[in-house]
Length: 434
Image (cartoon, rainbow, N blue to C red; front, side, top):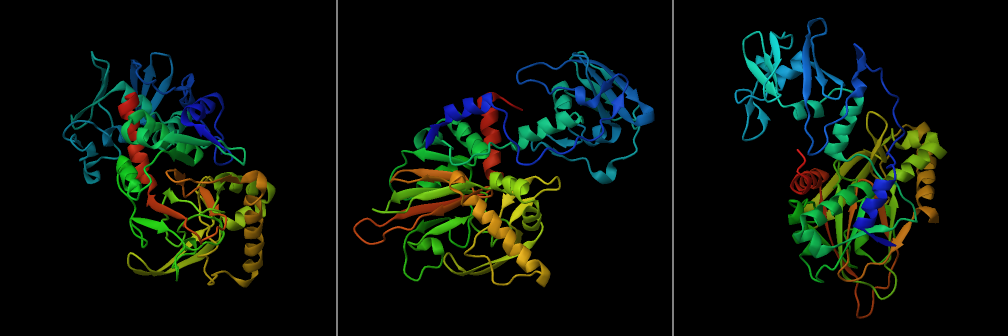
C-alpha cells in the first residue's frame, strides 16, 4: 500500500509520465534558413551554453542566435528590449522589471548585435541603450514549442503520474521532511506528481500541521480556522464532523478558489471503521472523457452552484459556481470541484440541461467508485497524509463513535502557489537550478 519516495522517484525515471490530457495538436513550426525553432535543446544543469553567432533579421524583426551545437533560436526585437537586464530596466534586488510599458517602443529596431569576450549577446538599440544577455538565460527562453513546453514543465511540474487501486502511496519520514532539504524536495515533487504522500512518525499531539506548514510557508485560513478538528461533534456544522460515511469528494468547492493542498494528521483512530479512501480525479476525468465524451463535456462546461453555511472561525454563508471538471484553454483537466454535501439545491440550468447534468454526474461518480479505481488505507496515530485537493477525491468509511477511543484527525489547508514556491526554492538549494 505504501512505497518509499526513493522507489517512486526511480519508477518515475524509468517510465514516461502520463499527461493530464490528450496531447494537443502541434502547431506549425516557423522555419528560418535550414533550422527549425523546434531544434533547440534547453541548456543542461551545470553545463555551459555557447553562442556561436548572432544575426539581425530586420525583415522579420528577429534576432537569430546560433548555438555551439548548430541549432538556432529566434527572439523578437520587442521581447528583447522589454526584457533588458540592465540596472536601468530591472530592479536587481527584486528581480522585477522597472522599465515601464509606456516607455517601450513596441516597434523598435536594432542597431547592432555582437558577441562579447565572455560570450554574452550584446545589443545596441536605436536610442543607443545597450542590453546584454547571458547565453543560458536566453536559451531557456527560446520560443520553439519544445523549449517553451520544457520551460513550463520546469516551472510548474504539470506532468502527472496517473494511478488506480494498485497505487503504492509514496511515503516519507515526518522529521526528515522537516529538517532535510532533499527529503522535503522529494516529498513536494511526489505530491505534485502523484497527488498524495504519506508521512510517518509525527508526534501524536496537535500542532504538527502548523510545524509542517512552516516548512513550506503558511497555512490557508478558511471559515473553519487555520486548522480544524475532525471529530464526531453534536450539532455538527460539517458532515465531516460526524461518524457517518463520507462519499468521495474534494474539499470546499463552495469557494471560487478552493484550497489546493490538504493535510490530515491522525491523533486517535476509531476502534472500528474510519478507513480512508482516495481516487485520482484527473485519471477519472480522462477515463470519463474516453468512455463517455458527452458526460465529460457536460461536466466540464456547466457551472454548478455550491453553498456552505454555518459558524466556526466566524459565521459564514458561502456561495460559488464551479465546473465539476475544470479544464484550461487546451482542454487539460486542472481541477476537480465536487462535494455532494455542499452541492446546492439551486441549480442554475435551463430545464433541458437538468437531466443530462444528473446523468453525467452519475456516470462520473459511478466511475470513481469502481473498486479498481479506489485506494483504501487506515491511518494510525502519528500518521499524516498530504494530498492535492484539486486532484484527489477523498472519502471515509463510517466508524463507531462510542467507547474509550474517539476518532480525532487534525486538518489544515495550503494553496499550490505557496507549495510550488517552496519546491522551486528547495530545487535551487539542492540542485542549483536557476
